[in-house]
Length: 441
Image (cartoon, rainbow, N blue to C red):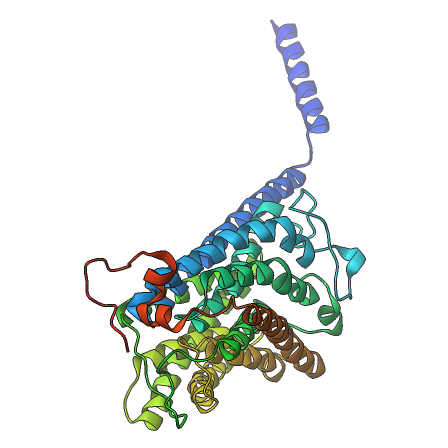
């Protein structure tokens, strides 16, 4: 009995020692579990942020349709739908490879990493992301850049022309300039900084919209013979206001998601700072635009307050991880004032931008780039160069495209079709069937 007990004890001790020798150290197992958890958390975080950015498409659709005549609602919604459809396919096929061509093209102007996405896609440079979730996040940004122009051309551009534009900007124009910064191109090499896309996304789209508005010319009745502007009110400010709130919500995917990680105390801290700066700048932009417009127009204007909020969001996007809370308020205040000044400038130049795409995204995209130097401490020369080169690229490429389309008669609808409304003339569909709303102005 004693011998059996002794033998059993010896065997137990031996088994314990063998298990201890053969098992990995406890701290190694903990490290492995931490890595697995961080991978899951970071990928799920970026997936949710990608969905929020995709949700911004709904916001843009509501803002643009509500700020325009009811007779063009189907056309505007259709363009937003195709920005997403065409954008996802073409960014997958070619745009992603142009934007993230790999280390071999670092510091350059152009590169190509191949078609589609792969397991070792260079876009997942953070190291803890599945390439697929990186693509989802990046393609949502591409769709945003494209859809900014939709509002600037509302009510007068042929649908086929818009589809051609959407193809060019998503497949080539946006990815190439995106590579200059986010893909490791020459702007990145200079030290240019744009955390979430004030310039790479918004200024590019805003200046592309400016080029389109210039080549298209104003809507019928927008300006008198002496150049004085006439207001062409949107048909549903309730929709537009809802769209602005949706864009605000989506921006919490746009900016915090650009950290690309949330696991770990350091990442969590900066994500919370980014989110707070984003909201502070948006609020300051809305209030500043309301007050400034109130002084100029002698009345509070809802559309100015809405665009001021969006301008504040655009202005903070490049630097939301680099500035203090008080500095984010200043950035938003300046952005709100710039929105109003930008609208006045377009009126003086007789340029018709129905939703204020250039003041919100173009002008404030540049402001965001410069504010990143002024408040964020990033190199002055690099920020100035980036704040010129990217908007110029968007403006010049789209100016050439729209001039070509105009020269072959593919750009603008006829006067009769414009008066009738693009819903009927281009699509033979009505957004509000059964209502007598298609009256001429």
